Image 1: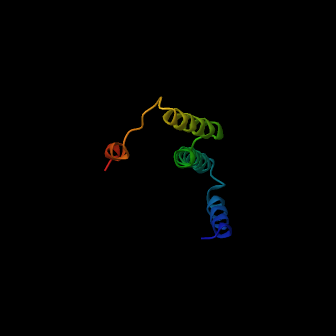
Image 2: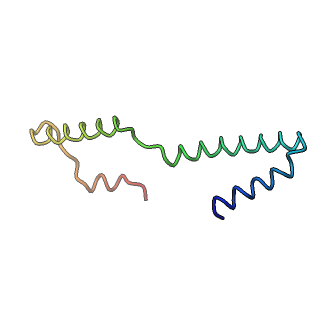
Length: 87
């Protein structure tokens, strides 16, 4: 359905219950629950690192590279890292 069709269908359904306050309260409660659930799902799927967190991670990574070049930090073989990944 297109957005226009969905809007028309919603208005049509609302017109059936608009005269009954009990039905309106139930519809309002249901819509609020849907909105709350959508917020939770949206946050779970769209939540990521903030720009500040990304910059900090990059700085830490470059600092680690610098320390490895200076011989102050030793890297692990890539095979060990791959072995730690879940199957």
